[in-house]
Length: 164
Ligand SMILES: [Zn+2]
Image (cartoon, rainbow, N blue to C red):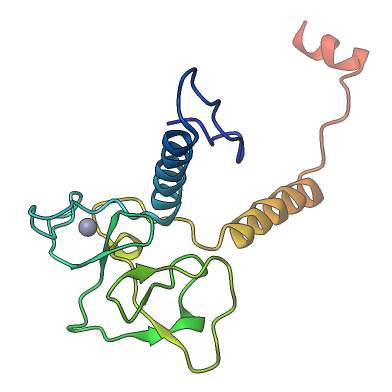
């Protein structure tokens, strides 16, 4: 897509495109970006609800972004307390059967959620659900490296004498 890769810039309205068609296109693009961000890329019916990466079957739900998401089956795992699941991976099922992922909000006390299959899929590299912790760890590694391995001093003329 790339339309929204640099932010939420609206696409240009095409010459002769009606406002209705334009905003319909914007809505579809927005849905595609949301589905991508949420990892809602499950195969749509009538294809079976099977993960493309590992072949395991999961529970499939439609999403508010007009896509499909695979959530871990409730057997053997049941819904888990939301605060134990990383943000942006806490899927809820609305009364109409549509799955949705509250964007970056703190879970309500006692709230439970479903776990997306991609978070525990053995066929893909694990996503980075705690990215700020990883960034902090990398920063600390850099700081520790600097603390215990100070940069080498500039070479003086004596070094040339050793190699010559
Ligand atoms: Zn999988």
